[in-house]
Length: 309
Ligand SMILES: O=C(O)CCC(=O)C(=O)O
Image (cartoon, rainbow, N blue to C red; front, side, top):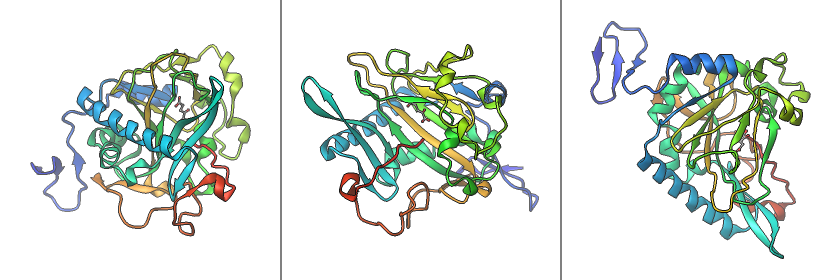
């Protein structure tokens, strides 16, 4: 065996055996892997340091201000900023609630979506050849009406035929930027709900499941800045309201899939090597990515930009 000090990748000098990644600094423990498969979610604490979270928070805020300036839901190919309009104190207010694919235009977002620690977390679950389908920011403005009613993410893995064997090949990750507590709209998760029914991606009755609010297994997903939460495509989860006066609740979500099980998405890692974004954007969730190249306001095109996850 030889180790390249430049890459940290351990290579077998006997030709023909694939490289395996060095395990130093690996935040993913056996207990996380077991909990993920057993309960459908896990939380890896303190993956990102406070100075890294500061960079991410600043990048998030820049995009929020862009959304506020735009004032309405806006799209440029795979990049979309969802802006709601809410009535507050007798006037209409733009509420930036989410965004997809900032990473095409933001080196900070791109750097963290492909951070080696994320790969170390993902490798034992889905390997080293990984595409990305979700690159998303969620804000929950204090006092806003923003929420994500309980659901399973299988609802958004469309078209179903593009995702083969979804359950074992898909992992959603969420990096907490702020503290997540029930009062500022932390997510809820229902441990074990990924095993409640057969994994049938065509079964739409599995998609939106508000009835799980009464399930005795439901838990608040309390997170601290820098924690990474994982959940599966069949795990019931969703977000509450931010009822605080001042505490924003920002979450950076990246959804990954085994490359050979999915026809859509951007490459994140090939054989464990990082793939940055360049060239023609891939087909992901915006079906017109090739035919509509210019930026537009959804309202001007009479489009409803459905929020996905
Ligand atoms: O941001 C939240 O609180 C909920 C996120 C969620 O449910 C999702 O991304 O599927």
